[in-house]
Image 1 (cartoon, rainbow, N blue to C red):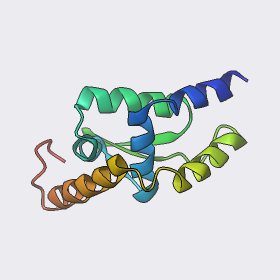
Image 2 (image 1 turned 90 degrees about the vertical axis):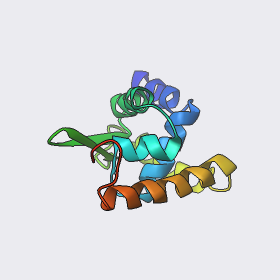
Image 3 (image 1 turned 180 degrees about the vertical axis):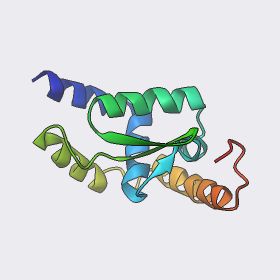
Image 4 (image 1 turned 60 degrees about the vertical axis):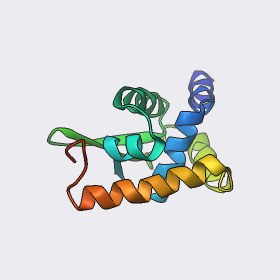
Length: 120
């Protein structure tokens, strides 16, 4: 029961829902791409990613100084998969989600061109 409550608490925040929506559309994102897409600070992005990781929703991978995040496909509990599947269907028409997607496209393009301000 404790893990289920932790999962719902993780999903009870707008920033964390926005992060999950971005991660469901891309296989993997670095912290700076998430920061740029959501227009938030590195501290806020990292804190919320940590909560999502602790709740079992995301996985991280380190490459040198950079940390990349993706949806955790090795779910702790069955409900993680079900909740993640529901999130894929929800919020798609929300204006803030649409804006996040547009900013993410720009961030990914800059990072591919090695013009990221954060060193990715």
